[in-house]
Image 1 (cartoon, rainbow, N blue to C red):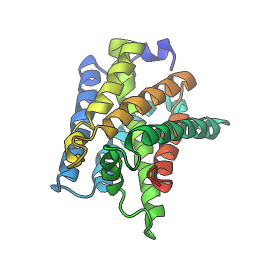
Image 2 (image 1 turned 60 degrees about the vertical axis):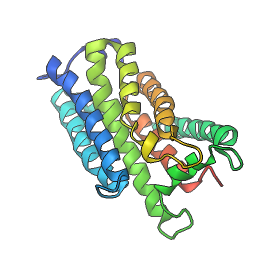
Image 3 (image 1 turned 180 degrees about the vertical axis):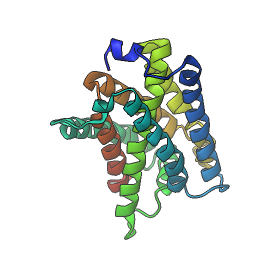
Image 4 (image 1 turned 120 degrees about the horizontal axis):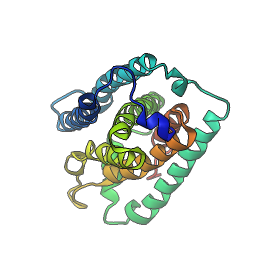
Length: 233
Protein backbone atom coordinates (compact mmCIF):
# COMPACT_ATOMS: atom_id res chain seq x y z
CA UNK A 1 0.00 0.00 0.00
CA UNK A 2 1.39 3.42 -0.94
CA UNK A 3 1.76 6.27 1.52
CA UNK A 4 -1.10 8.11 -0.18
CA UNK A 5 -3.37 5.09 0.21
CA UNK A 6 -2.31 4.64 3.83
CA UNK A 7 -3.07 8.25 4.68
CA UNK A 8 -6.40 8.45 2.83
CA UNK A 9 -9.18 7.25 5.13
CA UNK A 10 -12.10 5.56 3.39
CA UNK A 11 -15.38 7.34 3.03
CA UNK A 12 -17.34 7.57 6.25
CA UNK A 13 -14.44 6.55 8.47
CA UNK A 14 -13.53 8.40 11.66
CA UNK A 15 -10.59 8.59 13.98
CA UNK A 16 -12.61 6.94 16.74
CA UNK A 17 -13.46 3.97 14.53
CA UNK A 18 -9.87 3.60 13.36
CA UNK A 19 -8.73 3.35 16.98
CA UNK A 20 -11.65 1.19 18.10
CA UNK A 21 -11.36 -1.51 15.43
CA UNK A 22 -7.80 -2.67 16.28
CA UNK A 23 -8.68 -2.79 19.98
CA UNK A 24 -11.93 -4.67 19.29
CA UNK A 25 -10.24 -7.26 17.06
CA UNK A 26 -7.44 -7.83 19.58
CA UNK A 27 -9.81 -8.25 22.53
CA UNK A 28 -12.22 -10.53 20.65
CA UNK A 29 -9.48 -12.80 19.28
CA UNK A 30 -7.67 -12.94 22.64
CA UNK A 31 -10.94 -13.83 24.40
CA UNK A 32 -11.67 -16.49 21.78
CA UNK A 33 -8.31 -18.15 22.39
CA UNK A 34 -8.84 -18.02 26.14
CA UNK A 35 -12.35 -19.48 26.07
CA UNK A 36 -11.57 -22.19 23.51
CA UNK A 37 -8.31 -23.37 25.07
CA UNK A 38 -9.59 -23.25 28.64
CA UNK A 39 -12.50 -25.52 27.71
CA UNK A 40 -15.15 -22.83 28.17
CA UNK A 41 -16.04 -22.54 24.52
CA UNK A 42 -16.22 -24.58 21.29
CA UNK A 43 -13.16 -26.04 19.58
CA UNK A 44 -10.53 -23.51 18.55
CA UNK A 45 -11.19 -23.66 14.80
CA UNK A 46 -14.94 -23.23 15.25
CA UNK A 47 -14.45 -20.49 17.83
CA UNK A 48 -12.05 -18.52 15.61
CA UNK A 49 -14.15 -18.95 12.48
CA UNK A 50 -17.07 -16.94 13.85
CA UNK A 51 -15.30 -13.63 14.66
CA UNK A 52 -12.96 -13.86 11.69
CA UNK A 53 -15.85 -14.38 9.28
CA UNK A 54 -17.57 -11.30 10.72
CA UNK A 55 -14.41 -9.20 10.60
CA UNK A 56 -13.68 -10.45 7.08
CA UNK A 57 -17.15 -9.41 5.95
CA UNK A 58 -16.52 -5.97 7.45
CA UNK A 59 -13.31 -5.68 5.42
CA UNK A 60 -15.24 -6.35 2.20
CA UNK A 61 -17.93 -3.83 3.14
CA UNK A 62 -15.35 -1.14 3.92
CA UNK A 63 -13.41 -1.78 0.71
CA UNK A 64 -16.60 -1.59 -1.33
CA UNK A 65 -17.58 1.65 0.37
CA UNK A 66 -14.14 3.12 -0.33
CA UNK A 67 -14.18 1.80 -3.93
CA UNK A 68 -10.99 -0.17 -3.22
CA UNK A 69 -12.10 -3.70 -4.07
CA UNK A 70 -9.11 -3.82 -6.44
CA UNK A 71 -7.04 -4.58 -3.33
CA UNK A 72 -8.74 -8.00 -3.22
CA UNK A 73 -8.54 -8.72 -6.96
CA UNK A 74 -6.09 -11.56 -7.74
CA UNK A 75 -3.40 -11.07 -10.36
CA UNK A 76 -0.98 -13.27 -12.19
CA UNK A 77 1.89 -14.21 -9.90
CA UNK A 78 -0.03 -13.88 -6.65
CA UNK A 79 0.01 -17.62 -5.99
CA UNK A 80 3.71 -17.83 -6.78
CA UNK A 81 4.63 -15.00 -4.41
CA UNK A 82 2.36 -16.37 -1.70
CA UNK A 83 3.75 -19.88 -2.06
CA UNK A 84 7.37 -18.70 -1.99
CA UNK A 85 6.83 -16.69 1.19
CA UNK A 86 4.95 -19.61 2.77
CA UNK A 87 7.83 -21.94 1.87
CA UNK A 88 10.34 -19.51 3.36
CA UNK A 89 8.38 -19.26 6.60
CA UNK A 90 7.98 -23.03 6.81
CA UNK A 91 11.72 -23.41 6.33
CA UNK A 92 12.42 -20.92 9.11
CA UNK A 93 9.93 -22.72 11.37
CA UNK A 94 11.67 -26.02 10.64
CA UNK A 95 15.07 -24.52 11.52
CA UNK A 96 13.66 -23.04 14.73
CA UNK A 97 12.18 -26.41 15.63
CA UNK A 98 15.48 -28.19 14.95
CA UNK A 99 17.35 -25.75 17.19
CA UNK A 100 14.85 -25.15 19.99
CA UNK A 101 12.00 -27.69 20.16
CA UNK A 102 13.29 -30.87 18.51
CA UNK A 103 13.03 -34.24 20.33
CA UNK A 104 15.57 -34.39 23.11
CA UNK A 105 15.47 -30.64 23.70
CA UNK A 106 13.97 -29.45 27.02
CA UNK A 107 11.38 -27.38 25.13
CA UNK A 108 10.10 -30.19 22.88
CA UNK A 109 6.85 -30.16 24.87
CA UNK A 110 6.04 -26.72 23.46
CA UNK A 111 5.64 -27.90 19.88
CA UNK A 112 3.72 -31.00 20.96
CA UNK A 113 1.24 -28.79 22.85
CA UNK A 114 0.66 -26.72 19.72
CA UNK A 115 0.10 -29.78 17.55
CA UNK A 116 -2.40 -31.18 20.03
CA UNK A 117 -4.69 -28.37 18.82
CA UNK A 118 -4.81 -30.02 15.38
CA UNK A 119 -5.71 -33.46 16.67
CA UNK A 120 -4.21 -36.75 15.52
CA UNK A 121 -1.97 -36.04 12.47
CA UNK A 122 -2.45 -39.65 11.30
CA UNK A 123 -6.26 -39.58 11.39
CA UNK A 124 -8.42 -39.83 8.28
CA UNK A 125 -9.72 -36.29 8.91
CA UNK A 126 -6.30 -34.63 8.84
CA UNK A 127 -6.97 -33.25 5.34
CA UNK A 128 -10.11 -31.54 6.57
CA UNK A 129 -8.15 -30.14 9.51
CA UNK A 130 -5.52 -28.81 7.12
CA UNK A 131 -8.19 -27.16 4.97
CA UNK A 132 -9.84 -25.62 8.05
CA UNK A 133 -6.49 -24.29 9.28
CA UNK A 134 -5.81 -22.77 5.85
CA UNK A 135 -9.21 -21.06 5.84
CA UNK A 136 -8.64 -19.62 9.32
CA UNK A 137 -5.22 -18.40 8.21
CA UNK A 138 -6.73 -16.66 5.19
CA UNK A 139 -9.42 -15.01 7.33
CA UNK A 140 -6.78 -13.94 9.86
CA UNK A 141 -4.89 -12.04 7.17
CA UNK A 142 -8.06 -10.51 5.80
CA UNK A 143 -8.74 -9.18 9.30
CA UNK A 144 -5.29 -8.17 10.50
CA UNK A 145 -3.74 -6.92 7.26
CA UNK A 146 -7.00 -5.85 5.63
CA UNK A 147 -8.74 -4.16 8.59
CA UNK A 148 -6.46 -3.57 11.57
CA UNK A 149 -3.31 -2.49 9.74
CA UNK A 150 -4.94 0.07 7.40
CA UNK A 151 -6.81 1.63 10.33
CA UNK A 152 -3.59 2.08 12.30
CA UNK A 153 -1.68 3.30 9.24
CA UNK A 154 -4.18 6.11 8.79
CA UNK A 155 -3.58 7.31 12.36
CA UNK A 156 0.08 6.45 12.97
CA UNK A 157 1.64 6.38 9.52
CA UNK A 158 2.99 3.46 7.53
CA UNK A 159 5.84 2.19 9.72
CA UNK A 160 4.35 2.81 13.18
CA UNK A 161 0.96 1.53 12.07
CA UNK A 162 2.43 -1.77 10.90
CA UNK A 163 4.58 -2.16 14.03
CA UNK A 164 1.57 -1.62 16.29
CA UNK A 165 -0.60 -3.95 14.18
CA UNK A 166 1.96 -6.78 14.38
CA UNK A 167 2.32 -6.20 18.14
CA UNK A 168 -1.45 -6.42 18.63
CA UNK A 169 -1.54 -9.57 16.50
CA UNK A 170 0.98 -11.16 18.87
CA UNK A 171 -0.85 -9.89 21.96
CA UNK A 172 -4.04 -11.55 20.71
CA UNK A 173 -2.19 -14.89 21.11
CA UNK A 174 -0.78 -14.07 24.55
CA UNK A 175 -3.13 -16.40 26.44
CA UNK A 176 -1.54 -19.37 24.67
CA UNK A 177 1.67 -18.78 26.63
CA UNK A 178 -0.08 -20.21 29.69
CA UNK A 179 -2.89 -22.25 28.17
CA UNK A 180 -0.43 -24.27 26.05
CA UNK A 181 2.26 -24.49 28.70
CA UNK A 182 4.05 -27.78 29.24
CA UNK A 183 4.68 -29.31 32.69
CA UNK A 184 8.35 -29.83 31.87
CA UNK A 185 9.13 -26.94 29.52
CA UNK A 186 6.97 -24.31 31.24
CA UNK A 187 5.08 -21.39 29.60
CA UNK A 188 4.83 -21.80 25.84
CA UNK A 189 5.76 -18.73 23.74
CA UNK A 190 5.66 -20.44 20.33
CA UNK A 191 2.46 -18.91 18.96
CA UNK A 192 3.38 -15.44 20.20
CA UNK A 193 6.86 -15.65 18.65
CA UNK A 194 5.38 -17.03 15.42
CA UNK A 195 2.82 -14.21 15.35
CA UNK A 196 5.53 -11.59 15.70
CA UNK A 197 7.81 -13.08 13.07
CA UNK A 198 5.21 -14.15 10.54
CA UNK A 199 3.12 -11.04 11.13
CA UNK A 200 6.12 -8.84 10.27
CA UNK A 201 6.73 -10.81 7.07
CA UNK A 202 3.09 -10.66 5.98
CA UNK A 203 2.92 -6.94 6.76
CA UNK A 204 5.99 -6.38 4.59
CA UNK A 205 4.48 -8.52 1.81
CA UNK A 206 1.28 -6.48 1.90
CA UNK A 207 3.25 -3.24 1.68
CA UNK A 208 5.49 -4.56 -1.08
CA UNK A 209 2.67 -5.96 -3.22
CA UNK A 210 0.17 -3.18 -2.34
CA UNK A 211 -2.64 -5.75 -2.38
CA UNK A 212 -4.05 -8.53 -0.18
CA UNK A 213 -4.29 -11.76 -2.27
CA UNK A 214 -0.57 -12.72 -2.00
CA UNK A 215 -0.74 -12.24 1.76
CA UNK A 216 -3.96 -14.23 2.12
CA UNK A 217 -2.51 -17.08 0.07
CA UNK A 218 0.79 -17.03 1.93
CA UNK A 219 -0.83 -17.39 5.36
CA UNK A 220 -3.26 -20.05 4.14
CA UNK A 221 -0.50 -22.12 2.52
CA UNK A 222 1.84 -21.74 5.50
CA UNK A 223 -0.81 -22.87 7.97
CA UNK A 224 -1.80 -25.77 5.72
CA UNK A 225 1.84 -26.89 5.44
CA UNK A 226 2.34 -26.73 9.20
CA UNK A 227 -0.63 -29.08 9.66
CA UNK A 228 -0.01 -31.40 6.70
CA UNK A 229 3.74 -31.72 7.25
CA UNK A 230 4.18 -31.58 11.04
CA UNK A 231 7.52 -30.12 12.15
CA UNK A 232 7.98 -32.75 14.83
CA UNK A 233 8.03 -35.52 12.17
